[in-house]
Image 1 (tube, rainbow, N blue to C red):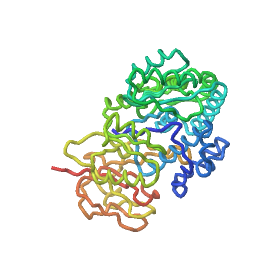
Image 2 (cartoon, one colour; image 1 turned 135 degrees about the horizontal axis):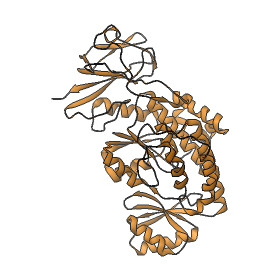
Image 3 (cartoon, rainbow, N blue to C red; image 1 turned 30 degrees about the vertical axis):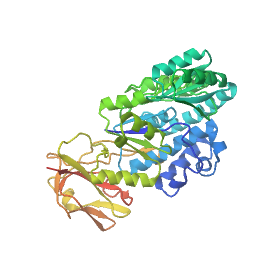
Image 4 (tube, rainbow, N blue to C red; image 1 turned 90 degrees about the vertical axis):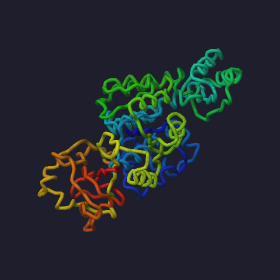
Length: 429
């Protein structure tokens, strides 16, 4: 099971969109600009550090950056078995799961950013990271501070973020160090997020949430508020409302996914913070980041080489003790046509059925499933050098011997260089 995680505010940086300008998924930017009424391209390419630090800008640009990377992953057929987002990233996770429409997600993120900006301007607040104290001790430090300060993020064991007034942060810093904290680091943000100081933003956000229809997620989504899976769309409005003034239970979220069988975590979007936290919580070999096109190529290389990091391709699931999975990728960009021997005239591949559903969020529409598998026996034998089809008349030859389990694109679909076209299993015994 691969889990996509999505970063929150604080991951933004000047020029963060430059690596995506020439990628087809950059079209997300125009969609976001049209829906939000904001110049998102300017924020991604030209805004300086001070402009991006503003909450209304930081949230929108981080959300869109993750959507670009998510769309790019979907274009090559990579989909998660579960999703979660840190604070703002929870909205991206809900879009990725199908629970929240792209248009509604953008509108909610814009309203959330404006509401939190206004709340921060009304009540002076800030945040700090306490290193070296456990969850219970960090909560006790906030209570002993006897000031306006609260736990905001349970990021990882021994790494807790607190939020409050400047006086509250000063008090909890002193108490935490007395209790044995190794360090207390100030976080340069414009408000006391995930604390009661955001209550005015919560009232405004609740009204916006009331206008949105949430669907049942297509894959598990673990909520920030309680680190539990919530499979019903009707639950998410209240969860997002509560999230604004409640702590983010991040390390508990990853522990929930571990119990569900997660084998890898991909941070989707500019950042790297969540990868660092995942490596502390679940181990170094289980986390990667996709923040630029090259990261996707690396991930595909990991997948095709059969290295330990395993990912679901499209809607395939299950484990094989002695079976390795491989993907066959396109050598060039062009139109894919499957080999006639694997087409409608083949007894083993006749009437290949749909097995799942994939999304293409670039045009904010849902497209048909892209995974097909042979009926009956469920595979088609392939040898090294066999052709599985052509891309613009260039043969696509298998580098592996095994069982072709399905195509990842539709016949006649335009594909990119390196895009997975089919997947197969290889007996390692």
